[in-house]
Image 1 (cartoon, rainbow, N blue to C red):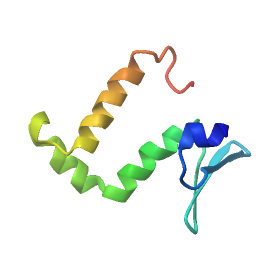
Image 2: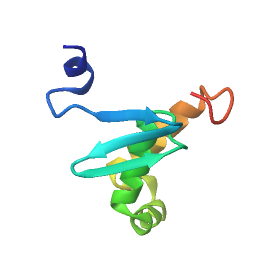
Image 3: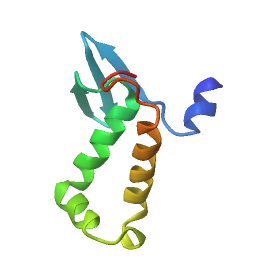
Length: 91
């Protein structure tokens, strides 16, 4: 019930920490990094990887009102999170 309330009705998130690494399963692939402190860190990486750096760079060249909503949401989230960062690299 808790997972459904937090994540909705889709497949459960498969994420674990192992020897200082966050490991996340997406379909039949495993992704891992020792830089991801949370699942949200992975999501940030995954979206950038999925869309590619060229897409992000081209969107950033546009006026904010013309950018893809995903990039606008990302910028808003980063501004919000930065308000609460007391010490870089900590959760």
